[in-house]
Length: 256
Image (tube, rainbow, N blue to C red; front, side):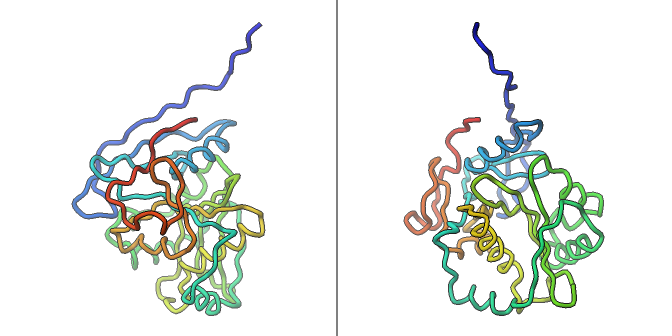
């Protein structure tokens, strides 16, 4: 007697066009699918390796007409060596303590998130988020997630990063930090901490989402070397391919 798989089909949808949040004058569209049920973790793993990102219980990837500016990027944890600037950031944050917290929103986190948005992204949609919007962003997760909190020796919250655990790495979903503490470069330090933590866990990658070479706000992601970028359906070492390819194929197929 033949056994049929009970796995339900996975449906993908394309969103309506919206203004691009990274490049002025361009239009953004995404392909999205729901992460739910007992297969959510495994599906999230496969889609992450195919260049998708997670928001709430949705996985998405850009499919913008005539544009492939968003390039998935991940850090090679085993081979990573900090450069001079990153070593300076590590020294500036000696005494900063990090702790993985459950994905539960707090008023303290939201106050910092709000200050960060107002200072760094005042013209973005997230600057208008209230506490309940923030709580949904943190707590609506169908997979293994934590909030990494960074604090100084007075227990002041300096930064936080919503982080997903994958079978082959850690995924930085969204990070934010104290905007007035420029000397510490907490945004860079969060990534350095994730790299070290991935090493401790024996995980080979830290996924940073999309690198957008033409966007000043997103260009920092290419500073962590060696990194790999997803082009033509294959992860390739950044530096062995063009730094800002005009026609990179972010995703050629989805096999779920």
